[in-house]
Length: 158
Image 1 (tube, rainbow, N blue to C red):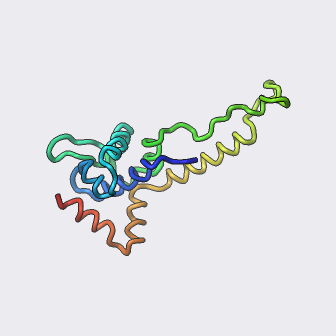
Image 2 (cartoon, rainbow, N blue to C red):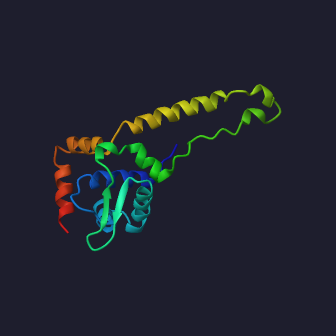
Image 3 (tube, one colour):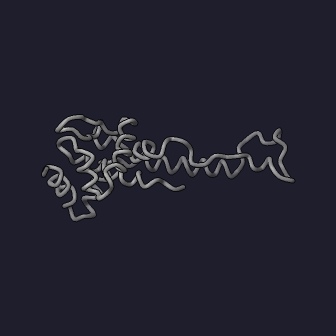
């Protein structure tokens, strides 16, 4: 499975927004993460459509999280950016070719489809278990306790 680059940027933006005292404009988030504003705007809009962030218009407008960072999971962000569809779609290849299985004998999913579904379920559960607040705490811990303070200070300077 391959996630889009937008997932990484959306997760970083959500961590940054968890430190913001006021709405943060797209341009400011793009500058912070050194990504093109138009590219980032597309992903922020997807987060807004999914209810992860809220957009405020006007001079002091920008984006904020819609709920506390401890209530926004990595899975929420991944689903907002890359969609909720399953990553594997069984095409019943076992029913094709010269040794095709009779469809009447294929009453359950094939072993490949079941294994892939189990793997995806575990992957989704792992993402659902990690919140934006967890990511922020870990980022801060692995940076010697200075990253979040730096982000808050940088976001305040306009």
